[in-house]
Length: 387
Image (cartoon, rainbow, N blue to C red; front, side, top):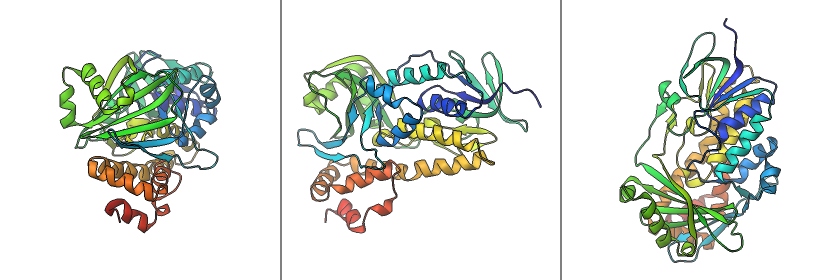
């Protein structure tokens, strides 16, 4: 058998890939981490770390530094239609966790990369592109622009449109109706607003949340039919829609670049086989409506590190991945169904006034705290019929 370059090769140094490299290296294994980008780099992202992501962040030793650097808390969700009062749902309390964190993606990636640089068992290479992952009886090989990397296992974490997932023949999607996101940042003077705010309009939703330094991430999510209106005028149209949809932001100033991403709703035929593991968005992504992207990536990174220490790591990780993503996908599909029709949003707000615990329970399902059995038949009936 050919000599191994490392115990694990990780392709993609975003949150999921960098976290996987750190968790595996700290278990005593040698890791090679590669990414075609140069860090720090910015990407379109919801920039909210949901409460379920704080435990793996703490395990990496990064929670306290982020909080000390000014990462603001997220208390829950406030939602409603344009020009109407918003309903509020606090995040559910679970095992001592309740608040999330606003994490500016540019800063968060850099924190992770700094941790990678200080880990002696990780060899990190920027500006190195992976072209292919080859499978053989001796284990996987990563073909890069400068040569081959041989490792006992490979983690693929190269994002939503993963070229390696596609090359492996594991990609399913994207599935219609196609959804897109447009993300920017706004400077807002005034006291911290610790809520994720969702404003529903005809054909789109506007999401905003604090990310520190008096800035709020402001993202638009919309379907392909609405996205056509942004063609050739992405920045000006984005600013116009934000100000029309959220009048409270009219006194703010849009700062930095505006990024578009999508379509979403990619799946994978498998997330682990032949010594190759998919984590983060490369493992499948339904929609950012739940804001669980970063937290899910961190939890998958922790799960793959744990799986490598078992007798059947691929099978162990596949089971863990189903547990981490099954119910949250169903919650995302349900929220998408409700968000597409303003009448259903209005009904949801009325139902929330009568039974405010319903949305909190759904959030708990989405965070993986508990299953759908937590929600009673009467609550389901009220949600869909208003009775």
